[in-house]
Amino acid sequence: MEQRKNESFIILLVSLSCISLTIESIIFKWEFWVPPLIIIGAISLWVLNLSETTDYRIRWVYYLIYSMLVIFFHGVHVTSRF
Image 1 (tube, rainbow, N blue to C red):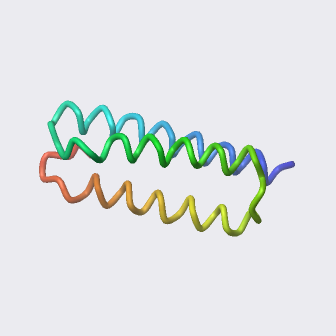
Image 2 (cartoon, one colour; image 1 turned 90 degrees about the vertical axis):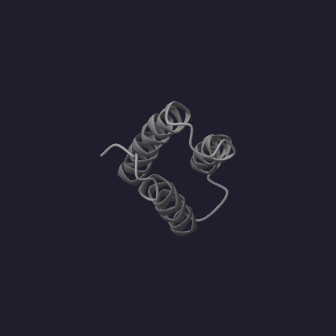
């Protein structure tokens, strides 16, 4: 139960950061095709969490890779806010 709560909390934080990154991307007129991918990725995080069809280790790897890609997208822009 504790692991499930931690996993949900991490996904909540990642989802909130993805929403703010999507807003920032729209405001600064970055690549227009990335925000839909970010939203689809965040939704897939929740689907994986709620369905529990995969092992938790595989889900953690997906969360990590997704977060790394989102951070990379944020970091490559000179106008990004820290």
